[in-house]
Amino acid sequence: MQNEKINRKRILDSMMPAAIFIAAAYWILDSILNIFFFNKYNIIAELIGADLYNIYIRVIVFCLFIIFGSHAQASINKLRQAQKSLEEEKERYRTLFEYNPIETVTVDHDARVTGYNLAKANSGDRMPEIGDIMYKDYAGKHNDSMYNELMECIKSNISKEFPEHKYNSDFLYIRIAPFSKGAIITALNITKQKQLQTQLQQAKKMDAISTLAGGIAHQFNNILSGITGNTELLQMEYADNNKIKEYSERLFALTRRMTRLTSQLLAYARGGKYQERQLSISELVEETLPLIKHSMNQSVKVVINLEKDIPVIKADATQLQMVFFAVMSNASEAIEESGSIRVTVQKKDVDDKYAMQHPGLKVGQYAQLTVEDDGKGLDRETKERIFEPFYSTKLQGRGLGMAASYGIIINHGGWIEIDSEPGKGAVVSIYLPVAASTEEVVLKEKKEPAEIAQGEGTILVIDDDDEVLDVSRLALEHLGYNVLTANTGMDAISIVETVGEDIDLAILDIGLPDIMGDKVCQRIQELQPNIKVLVSTGYMVEDITDDMKIKAQGFIQKPFSMSKMAIKLKEMLGGKKEKAF
Image (cartoon, rainbow, N blue to C red; front, side):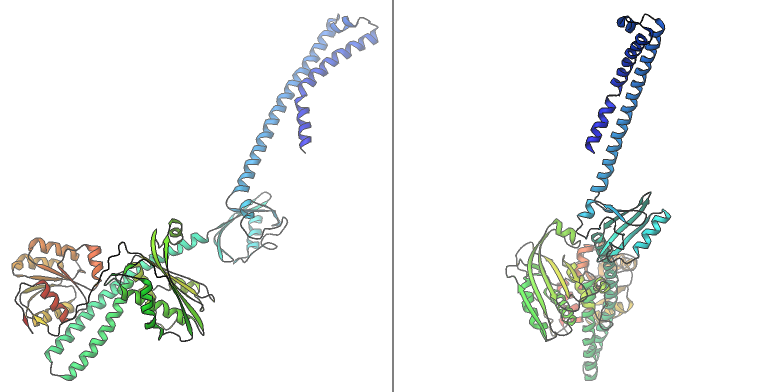
């Protein structure tokens, strides 16, 4: 083939010299014929041409050959340039086809494979043979009848796209574009993009649900405050009645259970850090495991691998124990007969690449807790909904544990994820950022005194819930305080403007209907700087201080007992005279 091109080029390049040679040959041949037929023996004279007519004829013919040769040479040059441009264009399109990063296959009108590019060749999949019928001789596990779709595109000459086509375990973006000789099929693997999109949607859904959960918990805590306060007042009013005391204790037990439930809801709503201290995640697992083993399937073997030199984290131990309990309980229940659970704690350095693959993580150093079981695993729907409140594969109403776990871990600046397939068990990975310093934080719980201290002074109670407002007024009056009430921010500001000099302390609920609590607090302190503000909220105290930056002198979380309130008031109104009750 190469030799033919060289020979053709030589012939084309010799067109002009050939024309000149032929013209000269004609001149000489015409002279020789004249000598032969007309008996002219002077060859020189005949070549030069004594006959003017013959000279004209020969010159004209010579010029015609020269003109023909020059035009032929110019046409040949143009043809050669066109062929060069065509070759370059073919090479450019060949390069675009071969080196296109998207897998591409070409087929003829019968859907037989005519070629494929390097991306397809390097994809690691089984390669089609030239002549294979696409989606018949060469096909994976497609959800749709792709052969019929391909033939329809070829016959109708209309392109088709399949944005999220399921192929084996991957998602592909497939486009079929017909052309004169068949069709071009491109396939882009979008599995990773699909996973990132799903994670983003899940995170947005979790944020929406967590907001709802926080609002519900806040309302529950308001109701529980009313129940707790009225029950305490009932006990005090009828202190000698044993029956009332017995029933009251039962009510207290129920409210404590409800308080734990709302604590879980608030934890899910990213408000679950009560008492942070620096701790070792390995030590926490060792201390917690014996406490939860009795509630697990006894045929399940627990294997632990805990690194001892793990950097400490700053977290609430009780909250993390709740997370560990929820994860271990789910792992145990997933194992129907006998099996094993592997608990691992290790240090994990998250770099940019790993953070890109796990959108919930930031670059940095983490303590990683992994709980792996060989149970029945989770299907896709369950895995996507496992962190939703009350979603469960078990009895309806259970399942808050994993939802609360999500909120707790996120609130600690960490991340939790589940990798699972049906029949292949599940792996729960929890990442918690290591502490910035190694100072040990020790928080001691304060015990409530047996006596409830009475006090004196004037207190302004600001709350939009009438039941809470009423029971707070009765409880504070029972403790010896003068009480003013307001159920909106504007009412509170108006009272302070009127009788602010007589008010010693304001108990302020943040969730007011007209003005945000931090604005009310600021306005009260502007009007009367001597008034101390105690924030009473159904949300987590840490959320209020972190998000609103409210400048109050004290915080107390609903629901609270009268004794806790009395202690708080004693701390804040230390200058006032108090007596034992």
